[in-house]
Image (cartoon, rainbow, N blue to C red):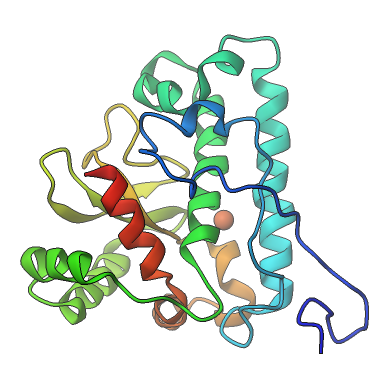
Length: 235
Ligand SMILES: [Fe+2]
C-alpha cells in the first residue's frame, strides 16, 4: 500500500522541498542565510509516524502552526532588512529586532529542526557521537533521563534542546515560547542538534497533558543519525 495514502483513500502529501537545515554546512555560517525563504517541508508523509505520532496531530501541527507561522513571518519582514540577512544574523542580533519578528523566525526555524529530527524508523548515533554523549552524560540512557527531568521542570509553551556549546560540550537546555539557543541572550547558547517541541499543540490530542508519554514516543522517533551529522558540521 502506498504509505502516503491515508485511510480515507485521499492522498495527503506534505510539501517537500530540498532541506535547508539538513543540507551540509554549518547552520551558523551557511544555510541559515537562505533558510528564511524556504517553505516548511517534511521528508515523510503525515501518517508516517503512526502510531506513535498520529496523522491528525502532525498535519494540524504542520499547517496550522509551522506553515502559518512561516506565512506570517514573510508578511512581517516584507520590505525590511531582515529579508536580506537571513536567519543566522537575525538570531545573532535578535535584540535589535521586534519581538514578534524574532518569535516568528524561531517558529520557522525550530519547527523545521523538529521535523528533520524525526524519522519513521528513528536512526542510530554514529560511533563518534555516541562516544561524545558518553563523555558528556555518562551514557545514552542518562542523556534520556536528564532530558525527561528537564521536561518536568520546563514550563509549557517552549522547546527542549540538545546543543553543542561553543567550547564543544553537549548540553541540554530549554527555551520559552519560540526562542532558541542561537539567539542573543540565550541562557545556554550553542548550536542546536536536537529540537523537541513542548507546546501543547504538539501532543495534546493524543497524550492530553501527559508530557512524559509524549517524550517517550518522540524518543523512539529521533533520527540520531541526523543529530550525529549535525554535530559533525557544528564542531
Ligand atoms: Fe509546534
